[in-house]
Amino acid sequence: MHRGCVMKIAIVSPYSWAHPGGVDNHVAGLSRELSRRAHDVTIIAPDEGTAVPGACFVTAGRSIPVPANGSIAHLALWPGTGGRVRRVLSENEFDVVHVHEPLVPLVSTSAVLGARGRVVGTFHAAGDGRSMLYGFAKAFLGKAHRRLDALIAVSEPARSLASRYFPGDYQIIPNGVDTSRFAPGGDRPARFPSGSGPVVLFVGRNEPRKGIGSLIRAFPTVVEEVGDCRLLIVGSGFDEGKIKRAVREDLRDRITVVGFIGNEELPSYYSSADVFCAPAIGGESFGVVLIESIASGTPVVASDIAGYRGVLEQTGGGRLFRAGDSGALAEALIDILSDEEKRLGLAESGLERVKAFSWGHLAERLESVYLG
Image 1 (cartoon, rainbow, N blue to C red):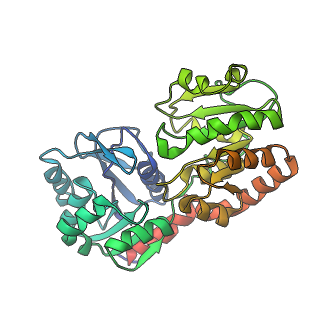
Image 2 (image 1 turned 90 degrees about the horizontal axis):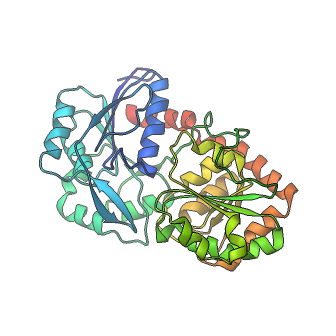
């Protein structure tokens, strides 16, 4: 390989393509951009799902749900999974195999051990300094770690956790955002709340670590101060009745629960909201939802956890509050919703500085890593 060449690249995810989350969205965004840059890209992941323009998709087999990091990961752990992955790699002469979460079985570990060309590993997970998965991998999969030619972490928290178990020279290359899709000025979705008051948007799954409870507890105080304020909840697993019963009866018609939406609809929700709220209490290595909102021209109120702090320090697109503190969350939302000049200033700053997270910019950096 030489600089400026077209490469044949396999990008591997251990997580089900039918249940997309942060890692798979990263893989899809990167694959789309590399294909735009004329590279030959093949995605390998469990199950089937939405196609990525320009990229080939190969399934690694069926997945099963596995509890992990306060969430549910859908992993392919069936007998034959490893052989299927190794067969794909042996039948294709990939210049680079880029494996995400390279020590998560069985798809990623099989790809690392079965690759013939250069192997690049990207680590996404973050935590409180301990990881049962990485501990297991260190004990039983040390050979896989030694096979990696280049180490990447998506954030400093992710680097800190991975390097605790697997020391090495990690580059920080963050998650990216497609700034051609996530941009200001989109049409309001049909299910967007009606009314003239400001809208606070939440996007995420119904998991305790996502912090939706803090937002629900803060909402009545925000309404008292801001007036005709509305809350819009987008994501899977929410019971609208249960959410509404958690607030006073007179506030229930101010809450809209949309549920799961496809990635193609998501940009219009971000660009139509007045403020995006990310109240997670931990377990987030990087705030993908933050950069999506900021790129859409919508300022962010986010909990002060390591994965979010770094994004807002780099973009200036919002403000932080003490994680898990509904009073501090209410104060932060009121501060931004009540001050249009501040809101516009945060949006302007974020739009300029979020360009560093565009997939076009990040793909250039990754091409250099691929070439070694």
